[in-house]
Length: 340
Image 1: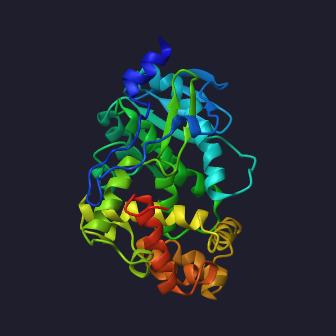
Image 2 (image 1 turned 180 degrees about the vertical axis):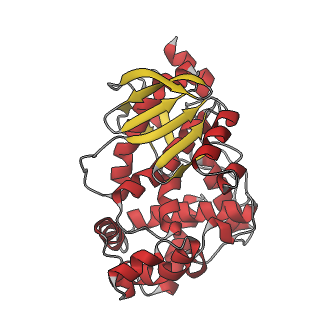
């Protein structure tokens, strides 16, 4: 009965990706569940206590790495969420290659039952003029705290995994990554498969049907953004709102992060970039004093536009033309427009 509930209420099983698009037949090889590694159990030890908040009574769930303040009354979500977040936390370490660190205190997550409750909390925490209030689905990470609401489908966990990567980096990195790199890692955290019969989850960075479909369209419809333009961009540098250009940016940084993680030519430099961001040494790429670099980090999108290319040239490669050719070729293979 529990396995059936997982499938019905969350649609968590994946039979394969068949997005539409140009090219040969618009189809990607389906996800081969039998080829996936063993999953992480969704059953984890937790402490559950009542949580009183202005709109009612929920529960606070404490696990090894998280403290979850939940008003959501979805029993399947409340059963799965603690184990899912713990499995995601382990996955973040694999994505980034960062060594485990003892947590001073659990990371805080709010999972609310409705957008109304989410709006109330957002207004209280961020303010009535917060741009976060324009979010139409899911939630966000603010100053290292994840704030979500239950969408009653698979997207709830996918968004928690994406924003959880931002939360993880907020608490682990002394120097911020350029947003194009950080968002690429966050999108890589979205893909997962739940084995309902085993009550386990496996994270699959390249299994992301929505991003895959958008990546195909960007390549087929000649909306591709060259790396030298993509790297200094933020999603806000595209047309305001969740337009095709914005979606294409997210799909491309997803492909970028996967390429950097797996390429024999670039993965060592990428690992060094992440390691030195953790230790607070990215200022060396700019040849500026550390305090000046840390002041620049406070300037939002201007930070990414200023540091992205110098940091990339320092750690990854100065030969952007060769990188571009290899990046496009990788993305075309990822989008099933060319064979391996």
